[in-house]
Image 1 (cartoon, rainbow, N blue to C red):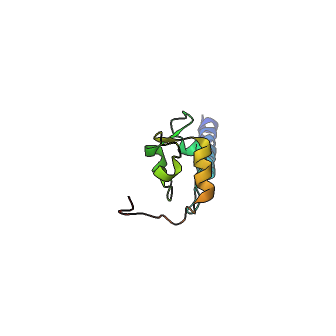
Image 2 (cartoon, rainbow, N blue to C red):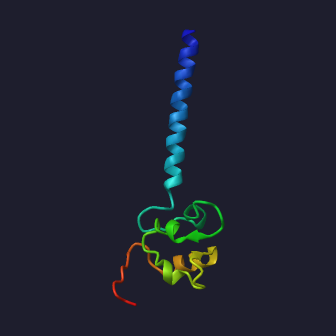
Image 3 (cartoon, rainbow, N blue to C red):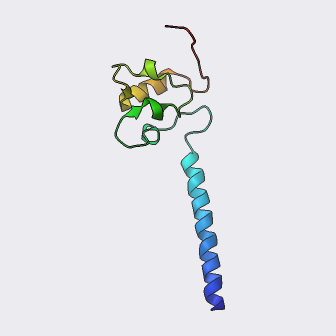
Length: 97
């Protein structure tokens, strides 16, 4: 039973290490100054980014990116906004309309 306890402790430690490494890897690509991938922003996986989901992307001007004004961003709209804006600078416009 002593050997069984040691094996359980080693397995637990390996699992904790693996989870930590996985979590660190998942965070890559969403560092400050970078936008997350479309798939990560599309939290519900419906193929579109809602205004609520887009709120997690610093620097994304949702209304400007929503070219067809349907209230959601397609992958092409998101990618076009990603290429056209610098996400490290969040531009807040007040009273522009």
